[in-house]
Structures are given as structure tokens and as C-alpha cells.
Image (cartoon, rainbow, N blue to C red; front, top):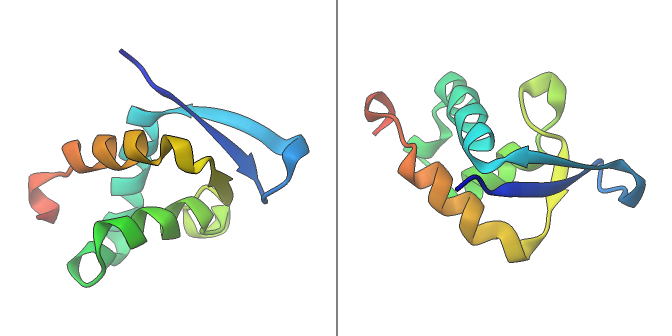
Length: 85
């Protein structure tokens, strides 16, 4: 079952958008492969940094509803590439 994650670009209510949890995870691990921040930061902090990071830096430049955080976290964790462990 696909989980849709609701986000708000630039933390603005009028800029609501959605992304599939699996796509968010894929983009997170692509973003992480450049800096490898999961080597030094807890995964929770890394995910939050990715979601709020600027698009120019590869992030989503958005905020999410905390009620969906467990879906985000578990999907990202389950998609952890072996080459980044």
C-alpha cells in the first residue's frame, strides 16, 4: 500500500503538495549519498534536515505533518541502502 505524505513548501499553507513515502525515501538516500550525514547524525535528525533543506541542496524545502512522521521514518529506514550502512 502506497502512503502519500503531505508537505508544505516553504512552510506555507497555500503551497501544499504530496509525495509517496517510497519516493521521499529514494530522494532522501540520494541526498544522503552526497554528504553521508547518517554517518554522524541520528537518522531522525537526517530525515528532518532533508525535508527542510533547500531544493538547491537536494532537499524538499518543506515541512510535514508530525502525524505522518512514523510513516516517513519507517519507509526511509526500510529503504536504507547497504552501501550506506
